[in-house]
Length: 339
Image (cartoon, rainbow, N blue to C red; front, side, top):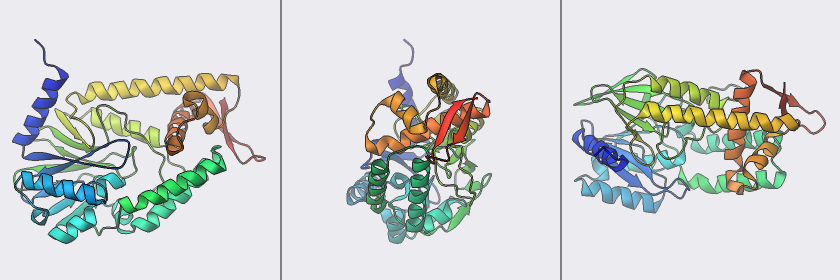
């Protein structure tokens, strides 16, 4: 009898255990569910990602660490993979209690250290983008209110160790390579253990759901709107070429065939781009109008996600010369149309 998905998943978790990588599933208030944090039982004792800033998350983290024979106070290093609050919210509390050094990509460090200011700048960026692409005022206002209500799930934390792409993060029994893989967020960082052929992939590649290439405010000070999906696909191509045997993601179960999964993602994005191109055969549309044609009246909290999806696929079609983006000076909207 061949190996089932359940067999492969069980084998992957056994492999993690043998590599002294322990899974901590921490609750979040978000639709994605629990976040995977990883404790590496090495020198230094290292926690990768933290969960959101909530009493429930902190209690469960403490309980799960205790089941492994550890306490928060034992932590010596905390690594943050990217800027989303379900991955970094508890960092300041854990660092304060343990004295652990906090490590993050150099591009991410200012975002973590000036959390409130960056959250406000992100909301302003998102509001401008939504207005330009046709999301109604009442939806934009509601989304900004939701975003502001979520801010307490994150928090500022000082970064002691600034990582750079290509850095080697040396531990007692392993060396992790630092790779920047932007797309899902501008700061996505993955950690590659070539000796064990293991990738700690955070939200870069997730088995059951497609990692959303959200259009985010540029972290390098650029004024140009990021092409998040194009950037994400470029990142996936780099990861596809790596000799990975198991990816341990930020949500859900391990990925044992990253090439097959990445190829599925490529195909999915091609199909969605083609569907948008067909919609535009009937005339120019705003991104909001395209999203409504594809998904109907989605929940308010999903409006920015669907907008990012549409603009990302439109960027693919623009890059190929199949459509163009035009600015309507009367309405102030951007419209997509066949070139």
